[in-house]
Length: 231
Image (cartoon, rainbow, N blue to C red; front, top):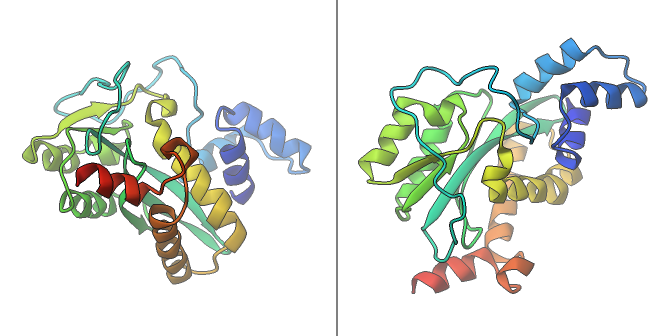
């Protein structure tokens, strides 16, 4: 799973077939069936359009992707969130974060040892106490299509946008955030325990928001852009 995580971050367009072949070149004689099982456990999906062979869980209402061709011009115009796998020395956790597209500011984050919905709701509630976006974009994972999650957004009068199935690039800013978190923090530190992971991730997100300069932001920090744009 550690190798899968690193290779997926490098080549998110690899599916289970190519990932199995890559592991075999690294001296791991695994079958595709095992890779597929671990893939699902880690919550991964290759980035490319695929036939609609399966549908997400049953939901009362489906929402279109609202961001195609949209110019992102201001803070709180679009927020999005996602979940990623974070490895530990023995085991793993899941990380969820909410990000503002215009400023790249991480409004809230939360970790969990399971892929339930509750930790996603905690991060969402924390973000909504800061501000309210016009549009909230997610993939069609069961956590984000759940009635609890969508009801939180509707109660705040937020327009809901869902990515196309198998289209992680529809949520590109979160994908870029995960690459930064993995390469600049997780792979360097190699966390031992959950408390260590939480402590280090808290320090990293403080650095990311308040100190890390972004070329796309004219070498400003996300916090400078987020707070400056609203003042």
